Length: 160
Image (cartoon, rainbow, N blue to C red; front, side, top):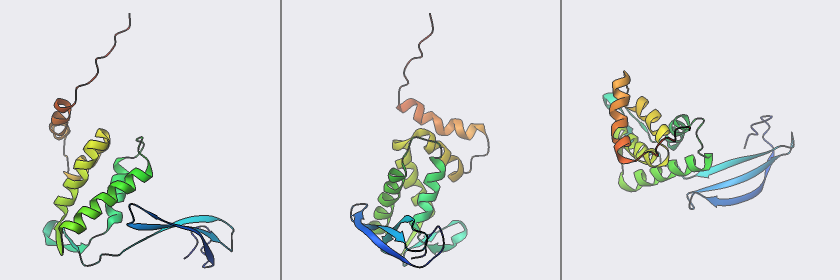
């Protein structure tokens, strides 16, 4: 493994443990060159599943794209990196269990939005605005309407 700090290829594994419900292995490594520690994750590759994008373009399924999109939506929100990885793992597990060869990006986006709506409403709206390509404020209002009716807000306390 190449060290992310000094690019040396001389490290040793200090600790290995299963994570993400046994779907991956987390390894703590020590670089013999710069003496720094870093973490790597090992997952099973599923290259046979293809994602069908707009215009019938196909590309291999990449869990990292889900995680990256969720991270951007959750930027500066009180959501841990572990929770974001867990959400991406949940979606990956569902996709790989339910689809053998192809899945439309629309279904993956809907899975992400469903989970984000439960996790954090601001992150949900951020993701939806990019995913659904909002063009004006009315698109935001239309997306917020179901959220506002589904969850009662606490009344504002006026100062005396």
